[in-house]
Length: 222
Image (cartoon, rainbow, N blue to C red; front, side, top):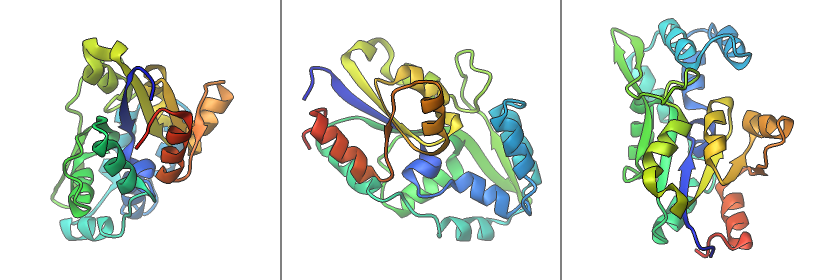
């Protein structure tokens, strides 16, 4: 083990879960109308908050449809085992998401993982509409709904120098976390971004890959 204490921050949609839950729900219940919005967001034409608000406005969904959709959403392979391993070693683990608490809480509860602390936007269903709100301030960031870089700074605070920060992600909503991380595990759009910007990132597909890498590097003995 190294001298600093590990602390792990993990994206939710498409990272802790196998697929992007929020995107899948919005696409399925907007008849695909959100696709153009995602393109505009990826190109930097609109902020995450604007994109999420406009996505939500296109969605028509009942509570029964919403929870039935969530019941088909699975965790990424090794997610539970990874969390159990770091927990057994006393390593702090947080989920940071630019998605919505309504589905994060449900999926964690369904998998008996409610002990995991998470930070996200707020989602509700009213009159068959999906409503999203943004409870967090983002320390000057105008890109994100719930800025992961801001959350990392808040959580580590004055003790930041004592930690080695591990961040695990898969998408462009994770970009703000990169400057705060000492070790980055990436896949998908996040990996492509890191490579194109010469940011060191370790590729993964499952959480078993991450466990194996941390053990081999001596960062983790569990």
